Structures are given as structure tokens and as C-alpha cells.
Length: 117
Image 1 (spheres, rainbow, N blue to C red):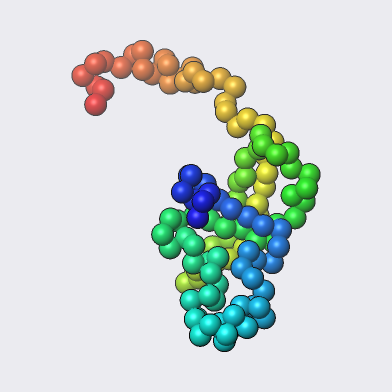
Image 2: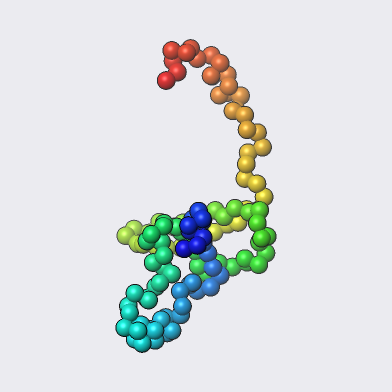
């Protein structure tokens, strides 16, 4: 929740899950008689929405910062989860030229003020 409260909306792990292995969770549920412990990490997004990725690999080759993560999900009808192709892109993703394309500048120059809404 600490990261979500600070604006993070994508988390990930190279592990199977960030919940405790179910054999341990089952033991805790039985000992404490508290079923709310099941999938505790997965329920974190109920208060603040976010996306979570699991079973990531090659994380060790990423720098500590200076990269963006882009996900290409596979749509699955009537599912609450699915798989995705997660890609890390190093460096800036800003466009080199911040000005409008030439055709757009020309079109804007030739429109009348009454044509603009």
C-alpha cells in the first residue's frame, strides 16, 4: 500500500506471486480462523487500483531507474486476469521533436478563426 499511496500503478515480481505460498497461508488461516488471509496481496488493489505482474524474468539486467515498462495484454473474455508480454524500454520515450508536424502547422495557418471550435 505504501507504493500505491505514492502514485505507483504498476508493480511486479519475478516470483510466482507476492502472496505467501498457499501451504503457509492455509496453515495461518486454520490457526487464526481468518479466511481474509487468503490472497492478501491480490486484495491490495481494492482500495487503490493498480496492475500487478508476476513471473517476470531478466529483471537483473534492468537499471535501477531510467526505463519504462509497456505491457501488451492478451484479452480473455470473462476473466479477471490473464497473461501479458511485458517489455522494458531503456531511456526517454519523449519525442525528439515537440513541434506539430508540418501538415498540421499548415492546416492551422490556413483555417479561419470561425472554423475553429
